[in-house]
Image 1 (cartoon, rainbow, N blue to C red):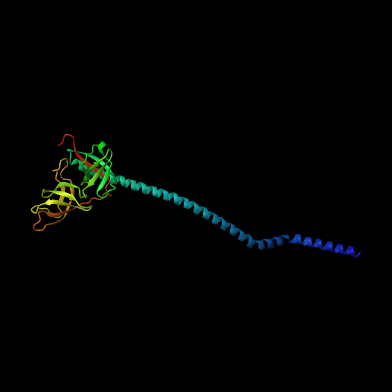
Image 2 (image 1 turned 90 degrees about the vertical axis):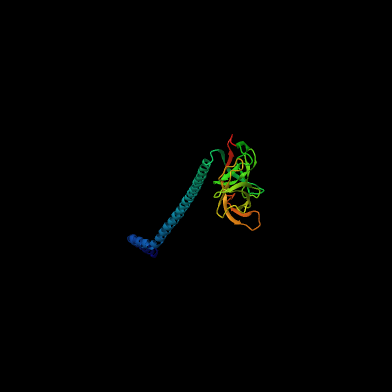
Amino acid sequence: MKKKILIFVVFTFVFLLGGTFIVRTGFVKGIALDASYPFLNSVSKISDFLDYIFELFTSKDQLIKKNTELEKKVELLKAQIIYLKRLEKENLELKKIVNFIKNYPEYSFKTGKVIGYSPDNWNNFIIINLGKNDGLKVGDIVVSDGYLLGEVYQTGFNSSSVILISDKNFRISVRCRKTRETVFYQGKNQKEGKLIYVKPEQDIRIGDVIETSGVDSGIPEGIPIGTVKSVSYEEGDFYKDVSVSINVNPMKIEYVVVISRKEGKK
């Protein structure tokens, strides 16, 4: 009897508790939601932060890629600018050559490029891309930028060696442009040459332009070589000591003009 009463009491308690749970479910749910809010909110923020980081790195990779592409385009444009400037420079040099040629219609001209330097003496010899097949001969005059540069020293079939006016072995008949007095020029070094056999009575002064005299066979007159840098004379000397400033830099020379007298001309 007591056992049945106990079972009844327990059953009744469970029934009442279940009813209470059913009645209180909405309240419990509210408490659960409030309790879970900080956690869910933190998870949401972490998720948003991770999405931001992902987008940030994705955008960074895209920016790096775009920046690399832009750098390539910039380098390409720089190369094109350099090429255009080179063409402009070549055009100016060729115009100078054309204007120079107009002054000497009785001579024939060939335009060439410097392709190398003599391994023995690169300061005083250059190699050009013209040779016997182009009609070049030893002794032909070579001009650059309107100034006398040297003369053909040796010829191959497709290239030639040119001795520059800076070499000690280079000699040529020249004159003073102002007084027209004839003397001889000889190379000395890369920056200057000298006039030889200048008599004491010859009026040659500092600043005078020295140019080809045209006395040498096949060489046109009036091609400038340089300007008188210094003049000295001591009583009793046979000749004056005259230094001529030249501007021959073999490393900056690109185009040259080779001059030879036309066929039938003497």
